[in-house]
Length: 83
View: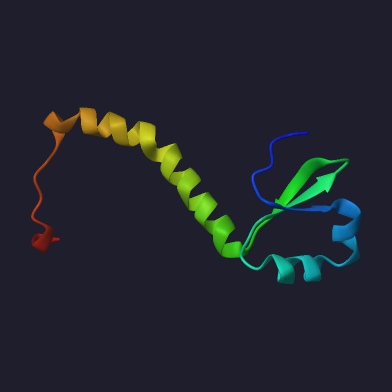
């Protein structure tokens, strides 16, 4: 069995029977929906998913940030009050 990234699990067939109940009982916790005892997907609340997307965007920007920090000699001083 693959590593599960949550303590809450449910089979795909049980999930299909009443997904609203699963969502309600999970509260704010992610749920692994299993297909043949392997995670098929994780059910998460929208705010959690939004946070994941925001973090992945931050991670994607890291190489550019490091490149820009290495070019400090090209930086231009700006007065924030003048903007």
